[in-house]
Amino acid sequence: MKIASLNLENRVILAPMAGITDLPYRLVMKSHGAGLVFTEMVSANGLFFNGQATRELLRSDPAERPLAVQLFGDDPQRLAMAAEAIEDQADLIDLNLGCPVKKVVRCGAGSALLREPEKVARIIAATRQATSRPLTVKLRSGWDGESVNYLEIARIAAAEGADAITLHPRTRNQMFSGHSSWQHLAILKECIDIPVIGSGDIFTAEDAITMFDTTGCDAVMIARGGYGNPWLIRQILDRLAGYQPIEPTVTERLAVALEHLDLSLDIFGPKKALGLMRKHLCWYTRGLENAAVFRANINHSGSLGKMRSLLESFFADAA
Image 1 (tube, rainbow, N blue to C red):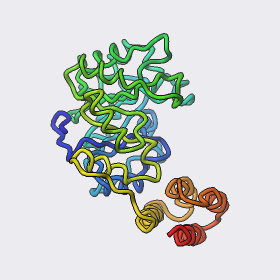
Image 2: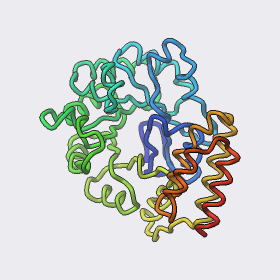
Image 3: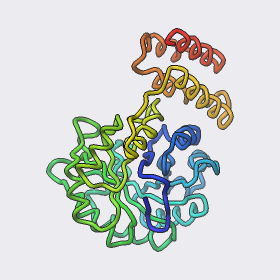
């Protein structure tokens, strides 16, 4: 897989996800084979005002490279300035035209930009001029069912210098409901000459293979399917290589959950790690007996020591 000058080891990519794809999570997913990992979305305005919380999102480690940084905002010049400011930290820069969350949309950013194709053109042109890094765009199919315009936006992006397009084929109004319209990926692939990355509803290795086979997309992007399941990446790579994917053992689940917990503690310290890791540890236990009881207990744990004890006890019983 190649995006402009960037060569990737494979065609399985970790999606940018707010509140999820922090440095510990990216390191776990990279260690399981992700060809490219993304930061959480980074505010161009936050960079402009040198916000500490925004800068924290850019914290990185050589082990996760290549690293993609996703920017969001609605001002072409500020996005261009942000791209220039982070160029040394990013191997690829992505522009968010798809986030459906209200607080992002209210600011005119994310999927709100799908209603302003001319502004999209100005944003991509300005950002392209500001950076020599590979530049990609992530978008949705449209704002709603009456304004599906992903082809128009993708053509604008390609014309203004984007090197690849990631499409999550749902409209903004769909949020994450129903099944994404994978046929939009197939149509997009036929209509533009730059790589197309498919996103949406990849929860198993077979989902990924089906997306590749039915759409012709160049790569797949893993989002919710990877929650507590970094093995999904290796399973997809195994299927692409013609092998039968292998499910992780209980012992492997525990080892990776503990690794993730330790990474979060080392990188963020105990207070922040405690808040961040509750959701991740709950995801690592999904599908196992008594997972609901574990979730209730872990969400009331008041220390990382207690969290670790609950985790080890749960997996000992599950073995």
